[in-house]
Structure formats: C-alpha cells, structure tokens
Image 1 (cartoon, rainbow, N blue to C red):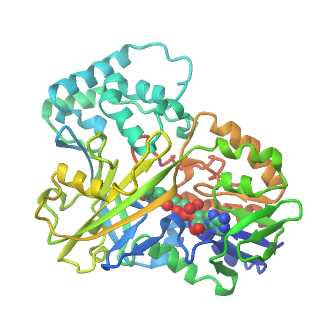
Image 2 (cartoon, rainbow, N blue to C red):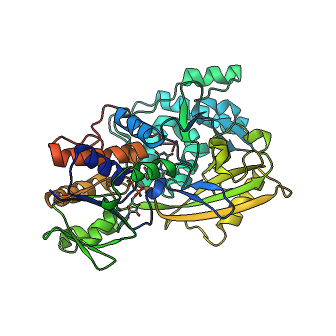
Image 3 (cartoon, helix red, strand yellow):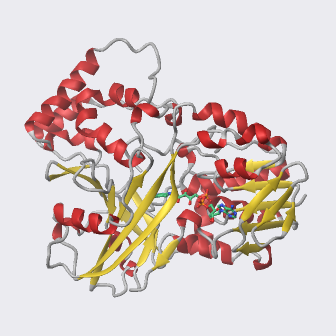
Length: 463
Ligand SMILES: Cc1cc2nc3c(=O)[nH]c(=O)nc-3n(C[C@H](O)[C@H](O)[C@H](O)COP(=O)(O)OP(=O)(O)OC[C@H]3O[C@@H](n4cnc5c(N)ncnc54)[C@H](O)[C@@H]3O)c2cc1C
C-alpha cells in the first residue's frame, strides 16, 4: 500500500513515525513549508530571540506520546509550574477565575454570586444547552458570564459563544463549587490551579519547534519532501497534483491540511465541495516583543495570563523567557513577552497596527513603561489558528468524512479533523499514529472519534 502523508506538523510526523516503526516501506510525507513543525514550529528572529506560534504548553494523555517526546528531546526539557493569571479590573486574579472571584471589586463579586445562587435554584435542566453561551450560563451563572466568561470567550474564539456548539465539551458539566467559592471569599484565600501536580515541560533549546524538528530529523530524509504544495486531489484516480507540476500516486492518504482546503481541492467530489464554505475558524496574530533587562517583579514567575477586557488587543500573553532562558538572545540580560490576538470576519484586526497596539497594551497593564528598552518585535499571522466548534459542525463533519474515507482519504489533525477538543499536539500526533494503525492493522481510531479513555483536555476558558 502506498501511503502519502500531507503535512509535517505533529499529525503528519506522528503518522510518518508510526510508518517507520511498522517498517512500512512505501510512504512519503509532503509539506508546503520549507521545514517541519506546522503550527508547532518555532522561529528565531533577526535579533536571535526564539518564538513559538502562540504559547505552546505540552500536554500528554498518552504513554505513546510520552515516549515520542523522549525520542525527540531525551532529557533536554525544563519543568515548570503552570502559573496562570487573569488580568482585569486593574488587578491580578489567579486562575481558575471561578474559584477566585473574591478578588473582584464588590459590584462584580455581587453579580457573580447572584448568578451562582440563581443557578442553584434553577430547576429547568431537562434539555441540553442549545449553544455554548447557554452552556456557560448554566455552568457559571449569568453574573460570571457577564463579568468574564462571555467577553473572554469572544476574545479567544473571535466568534460569539451563542454561535458555537457544545458537543466539543463531551458530557462534561462544569459545576462551580459554591461552598468553596464562599470559603475562599471569607478567608480571602487564593485557590490556584498550579502546584507540584500541575507542571509542564518545555524544550531547553529551540522552542516547541525543536520537538518536531528532532523527530523529523530521525526519519528517512529521502521520504520527506518540503516546499511542495498540494494543489489538487483526484480522489478517483488516487493522485495528488503538486505546485511543482509533479503528481504523486497513493493508495491511502493521511492529510493534515485544513479539511475545507481538502474539499476545495478534491475537484471530482463536487457534492462535497459545497460544504467547504461552511467551515468556521479564526485566525491568530502572534506578536513577540523582546526587552533588555529583567522582567518586572509581577512577571517573574508567571507563565501565561488571560485578558478578558476590551482595552487590550490580546486574550493571552505568555512570559516566553520564563519557559526557557534560551528563548532570548542573551540569557540573563533580556526577557520576552508573546501575545496572541484572534481575528475573524466578526472580529477584524488591523494587521498593520497590531504590533504597536500590543506594545501599547503591555504599557496599559503595566508590564513595561516608556523607558523599557525594546530589543525586538516579531509578528506572524496564522490564517488558520483555531478550528471553531461552530453550531452544526458535527453534521458537516459527519457528511464529509465518511465520503473521503471511502476514497482512501483520512483527514486528521487540528484542522484536518476540525475538532478543537482533540487538536493539541498530543492529540494531533496520536491522530496520525492511529490513522496509520487503522490502515495497516485495521484497528479503530480512538482520538479522532472522541472515544479515548483520557479526560478531554480542553476547558472552555483555558487554552
Ligand atoms: C495560538 C495557538 C496556540 C496553541 N497552543 C497549544 C498548546 O498550548 N499546546 C498544544 O499542545 N497545542 C497548542 N496549539 C496547537 C498545535 O499547534 C497543534 O496541535 C498542532 O500543530 C497541530 O498539528 P497538525 O499536524 O494537525 O497541523 P499543523 O501543525 O497545522 O500542520 C499542518 C501542515 O500541513 C501543511 N499543509 C497545509 N496545506 C498544505 C498543502 N496544500 N500542501 C502541502 N502541505 C500543506 C502545513 O504547511 C503544515 O506544516 C496551539 C495552536 C495555536 C495556533
């Protein structure tokens, strides 16, 4: 069986790794980019600062993925506590927000409490929530939604919560422990999510991209081809047409390019092509700013911070130099911040101004002042940032995926499967691994179908 893999991000590399592991000879991996990594790639800018495409934190729900990470970097990792905060109303609130509302100004706190109490009384819970906004309201109460959940989620997703579905959260019901909230309030106690059990690893050198570069370098070079874009798919003849004018034949295709792109390129399936315009996503602007000196005291140990309010363009900022001192050109003498800004047709961004707007935002929240020396500014626009779980998504996926599969095309990964709930690096790599096992061994895929045993990793208000 000749297997082609499109994309050298975590999905494609997971697939290629597994093919090599099985000793399967007839395969090739193709990527439009000049090197491996996809959205998990890192970049070194002209000033020598390393940047990820957004703050990447490595989760793992699989032993197989753990061992893949050992193959990638051995013990060249730093271990960090996941210290996350929310900045709003001119103050820091530890994450998770709902447990620490006692830090809010009185009027906001009262609104949140009223919503929680109202929710406790509410009995009309026989029907499932109609959309994400309703799920949030049932989970956190109207007050907390007005104060935090709705503005924050719009800022992250760049789509209104009432246009998003709920199936991506599985059967989870996020209940707020009112007794705990009240206890924290009376004791004025920070109830934080970090500590010895909430740690994450980060590559000592080279950013997140070092993981995927390393795995790619351990695969047979002759079977990887970069700088080649797939421009058309003939699913009947099972052939790919590439930007360099060449063709590639396949028996099975594992594709991690956006599913909507695959539908547009598969010209012999016109019935499916009409679905392409229904896919909803958001774009991301990643802005990195490097500074001389040391970070202010307030940022010394923080990992990432959420910004629900409208006076800053970013929804999340990572203190990227805290992840590895090697993320700056001169360790110990410099530091860096990386901001993420979402964009969509309902939340436009002025790309020409975004770097200045982000720096202005850093000033507004007190990270820097007029004197802080800026060493470098870096900006990347990711046309595909977040695969939005829009209302009606599952019907579209159910209509297109079986047809593609019947034609030997397994569309997998963050935008390949378009399932946000299984779109982190570990899920993506495992989707690639499981797709190959399905093709070669006939085993069932569990990640893309959401039938894994592990807890779904995504929190509505987290990353
Ligand atoms: C802002 C942001 C923050 C994130 N934070 C985290 C995090 O904290 N933790 C985490 O685990 N994950 C995080 N992720 C997700 C992570 O980046 C993805 O899980 C992962 O990169 C998805 O892998 P993939 O292989 O499915 O897709 P991608 O990484 O998108 O790779 C797809 C590849 O396909 C190639 N391709 C596309 N079209 C074509 C074509 N026509 N022809 C040839 N090649 C093509 C692309 O060049 C690309 O290399 C984040 C993502 C973003 C955007």
